[in-house]
Image (cartoon, rainbow, N blue to C red; front, side, top):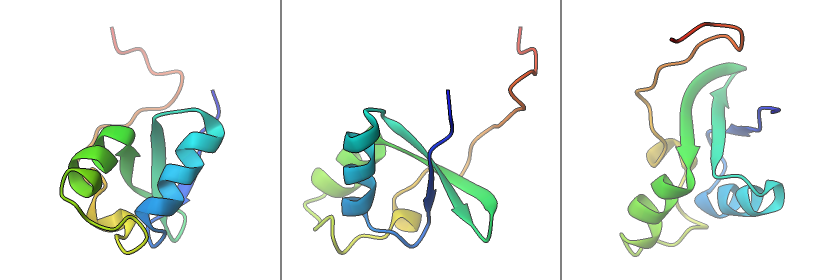
Length: 78
């Protein structure tokens, strides 16, 4: 599966449109080419929609998950 990358300064509306386009529920967020967070459809629901915020005014960096664990694709996690 290919990684779909989103820049942190994009809006929640941009992220929602991207998730819809790629038919996935998860995006990788970067800044200056470095992984800084992840964004899921659940993040958008809890932090934007349920919080009654306007998606076009909310920045990804303010609603993404910042604490995560990442590995290389061939890492054995068993």
